[in-house]
Length: 338
Image (cartoon, rainbow, N blue to C red; front, top):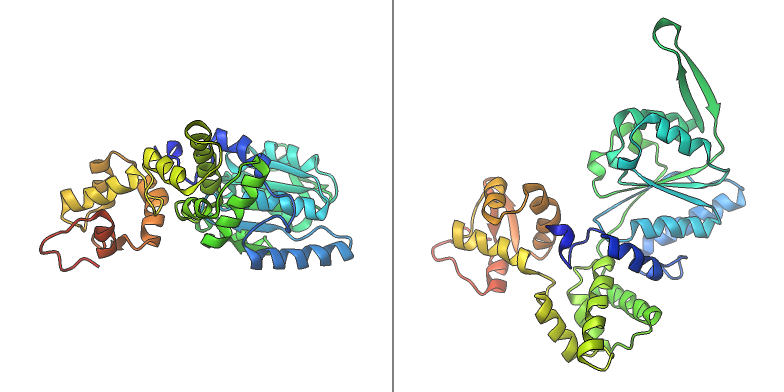
C-alpha cells in the first residue's frame, strides 16, 4: 500500500523520528514557501507589537510539504507553547473541552487533519475560536441550560490535505489561510544540502540534484531518499554520496529519474496494456491494479497528472503521449490520446 512506498508523501513512524532531527525551527531555516513565510513574519511581528496572539491559521496542501513543521516554526517565532493533536484523536466534545481549558494565554493548538473533526466537536470549536469561550450544556431536556466558560486568548493552527472537506463555518473562522505549494527543484536541493549537513554526510552536487529530481518536489520524500542513499553509500562505498553510487542505489530501489516507482508504472502500464490507453473508470482501474480507488485518486494520480502522464476525461483515466513516451510504449490507432 501507499504507506509502505519509499516515495509516498504519507508520514510513517520511521519518518517521525527522522524528520524531527531535521525539522527547521525558525523562518530563516525553513526553505521554500517564501510568500507564506513573508506574510506570516509580518503578521507575527504586528501581533507581538500589540501583545496579542496571531489570528487562527489554516494550512492546506499535499502531504509532506511541511504543514506540521510550519506550525512549529510559528510557535517558535512567537515564543508560544504548542499543543499538538489531530482531528481523529478528538472523538468527543469533552476531549476538546479538556484540551481548551488547559491552554495558557498565547498558546498555539495545532490540529492536524482538521477536516476529520466530528461535527459535534466542530460546533464546540466555533465559539472557542471566535469569542474565546466554551459553551457547556448542563442537564437535558427542557431544564437544560448553557454555561459559558471564558478561555485565554490562543491561536489554532489547523492543517489539512483536503480543504474542500472543511465546512464553511469552520473555514470562515480562520483569519489566515495559506496553500503550501510543491517545491521547486532548487529548493529541494537546498533542503537536501541542509539535511546532509545535519546528518554529517558528505554529498556531491550532482548527487544532490539526482535525489532532488526523484523527490517528487516534496521535502519529506527528499529526506527519506537521502537516508536510503546514505545507507547504500556507507555499505557499498566510502560513505560519500556521489553520482555513481546514488544512481545505483535508485536502481536497486526501483525509482526512476522522475521519481516514479513500480506502483506508478503499474498503473500506467495497466491503462496501456489492458485498456488500450484508456479511457478507463477509476473503480475498474483499481480492480485491475489491486489498489484502492481512493488511494489511486488521492495518492498516485496527482503526481502523474503533474508530470502530464495521466489525464482525467469524462469517461475515465487516459494515458497521455508523454506517459507513453516515458514508458517507451505505443498504443496503435489511439489518436484520441492527449
